[in-house]
Length: 583
Image 1 (cartoon, rainbow, N blue to C red):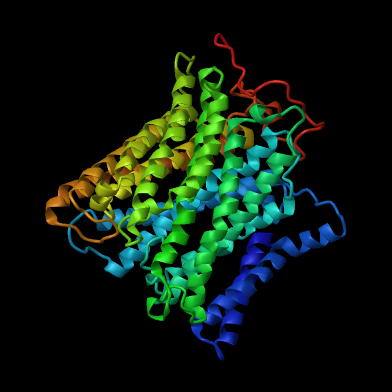
Image 2 (cartoon, one colour):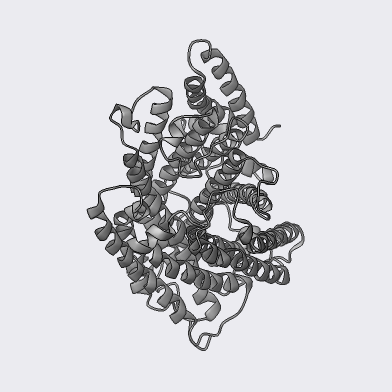
């Protein structure tokens, strides 16, 4: 039998092509493509298994248990299956975006254009950017959030299991149409899709917008589901300050997702309407405003940074107490800081627009709010360092990646000060300094935390232990390659080297070659990680229910957990980090 996901994709592609060529007789190519995509998604869902799931729901039938790898290719509402599906999709995007990065760095190894035109380079750069952004947005929240959160709060599943499955199943068509954009003229506006660049040009730009909007709906469905699950389905006795810090971080992230994602979706739809329906939201000649798009985009996209980094903070503070054998330092203050960051994240967006031509009187208040958000962020650092201080630290692979988050994000935070202040931002805007800062924040924070989470929860998910030596090699090469790649970009950026440009002055050649070679070290480290995971899944030693001697509820279950999690509802009597100093 053909797996449901494969069957759905085949049906979706056939229906898209059928609708497109049928509509193209009367409509423009862009209008035909947009309508065909919207019409093909229900076909893809119905044929892939969503129709059967909907029928079972109407008839109040139980979903049959599916075993083996086929359950990960089916419309399955088990939160653990959905979590694994999200992780596999995220790593597919991670490898795709990484290959795009290697192509870029090969082009940039020497001055002059080597094998790509500027248009092709812009498309490759944009593919890398949006791919990595989607990884940072979905890997921890979608993967670990789905798999771990119900286990940590003592729930049997998510509040809305079928909506949970739907949130994942919207990602494959988004990824598919994003990849197809590369072969339909590409897109030259990076991952931001600024108007008016995005309102005209090849149909590949429309495909990008449709992919971005689809992933937005996926995020909203997932965010609402996580929030309701955490609020309504916690175990008895799990009061506000007895909730694991990772669950707090996911709840805070879900609030940001629910509020902010609808705003960026509206801006994307307005761009689509400008392209397809000839509206004028962003056409200044007909009364539109391109600054409006930037305000709408960044109202989401700066909080999106916290959608990426808040779960990373939560994961960091989840791992450190276990491997330092100490209670989480300043746990109540760390929890409150997470929620303060949520509030402040909505009033800092315009620091991305100091050079855009917006009303000048807005510069100072956004400078102040951007600086203010560093205070609760600093408290997260203090909680991390306080937990490590005088702890009985075990330097496992999860510990190394967690400490890597602290080191990298510190650099990202300190360099962010220069971009928060108007005078220095004007000088550094759109240079490689911004690229380096962003990567230290997102890759140095979110991706390092993602790897910490993979190694920490791998025994629970797979029921096997990974190879610790290979894990350490992965960390060492990844940490070295990452810092060797992006620290030099601060220097090149302060000397005026522009980002998103396929060429550079010859005098920058030696440093650019160094950066390109270092980037390939990152590639090698990820290859080691992939080998370790595949080898460990097949031949790793069996894992016990609690190999780390952790105290959160997921570690009270077998590895991997049973289908319905807990035989009886658990009851919580203490905080999840009651480690003794002499333990």
